[in-house]
Every structure is written in structure tokens, then in C-alpha cells.
Image (cartoon, rainbow, N blue to C red; front, top):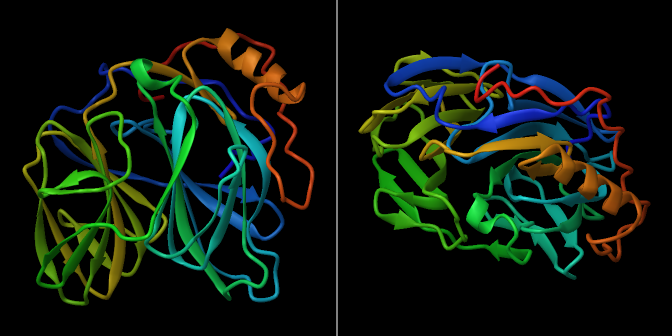
Length: 321
């Protein structure tokens, strides 16, 4: 998914200076952003209070939206560098096309993982015809220096490992949770998991105390470590936890995101993750000139034009604003 904000701001993320080295309960509220004609997303990262959780650098939650009589998701071809995109659905389907020639329909609880590396472009759209409801999340993972210029590639995994407990099923999207490891390629110590809880369930999920964590609520009524987390909001949990208490008042869906705090500072603007403003400028020029990113075949529409770069240079601010 693209960042369609036409006033895209430069921001510096990463570094360990603002990592919370102990358990906390910091509730993050979303910013509402229009994505095309019929989709509005709730942006949780980067946030006014926090920019990253481990290597997770961007989180949008959308739906559930009734798109029975709407075009649904329509994100034209756009570029990426220096990151991985993670597509995750609870309802509906998303058709992925990219400049490598990949064509895949992502369905609920299937992993669509695109590694941009040095450069890639892709589009995302609701298939025609499509399901009546669309509900999911789009996330970005920052690539570390050693891997940020890898060859781009796309992975689609329909079967993912699970961890179960009474009233809880955790599907491992990326990284490792309680001994179960996703087949998706990860470049940093990281975890992403989809948590499905039954009404009345109480569970304790094992965690790595060296990771920092956050939980995104997708649906239902649930308490995370005693804090009610409503759908479309995120609870930042800090580091130093060995387990996470969960209690569901109704059937509920969550996403657990975590990882070792990302040591490097990154520069994120529009759909690019880089290290310097010159890299961002060069990537923007290459996209606008039709260089470097290749072409997405089969999408019915023109590619996205990049927004204008800010007139003022970036001022680093660290992991939090």
C-alpha cells in the first residue's frame, strides 16, 4: 500500500535513544487518511507519539468497509526502496502486481510479503468481482543497512504456522513466536502475529524481553495487560516483558508487532526508506523519469506521481516526536 499523503513529510526514525527499556502501556490513537475514493485508513505508525516498533515503521488499519457497490481498494503503481511491505487481511481480497511480473491474490490470513530492496514498484486493488467486505492492515518493515539494497522479491504464503492455547490462536506472520517461525524472509530479529481470541478467553502469550512490542486491535472487545484497546488503536508495550496477559470480552482480533529496537536512524518519506535526503531525492527523480523501478503490467490506470519534496531540510528528531 502506498502512502497517498500529498503533503508527505520527511521524518527520521530508529535509533535506540528513545526505546522504553521497561514495560509500559502507551495507547496510540490513529490519524485518518483517505486512500483512493472508497477507502479510509487509520495510520498508527508513524505516530505523533512514536515512530517505530522494532523494525516496524508503518502501520495502516482499514475497514471493515462495505465495498459491495464500490471499487474497493485502488492503489495505482508506486515505488518503494529500503523496506518490506506486509499485506494482511481479515476479510476480502487484494490483487498484487509488481514490476517483477508477480501477480497474486492475497486472501484472509495469507502473507503477502514484498521486499523492495534497491527498488521495486507495485499496485494493489480489489479484484473484479470482489467480496462485499474489506478489512485488513498494511505494514512496512525497515531493512537494515546490510540488506537494504538486496534484489527485490515477492513472497506469497497461504499456509502459516500457528500457536494455540485455550481460546487463542496465534498465526505467525513474520519472525518467530513461541517456537513457531514464519516462512517469510526476515532481515532483523522481529515478530508479527495475528491473534484470534474467543469471547471470554484469558491467555498469557510468551514474549522475548529483549524485544519491544505493540498490539494493534483489529476487532472486538479486548484488554491487553489490563488496558482496553478498541479497534483501530494500538497499545505500545515497551521492552522487558516475558509474557503478555490478554482477556477478550467478545470474539476479538489483534496483531502483535515486535522486534529488537532498530539501532539505525532511517529517513522515511512518501514510499521510500533511506538514510540521507540525497537518496530520497534521487529515488524520487528516478521514479518521475521512469528509471530504476521498472513497470507494473496489467493495472488499468496511470502510476502515482510523487509529491513535491519539502522546501526545508530534514531536522532529525529520533524515535519519538
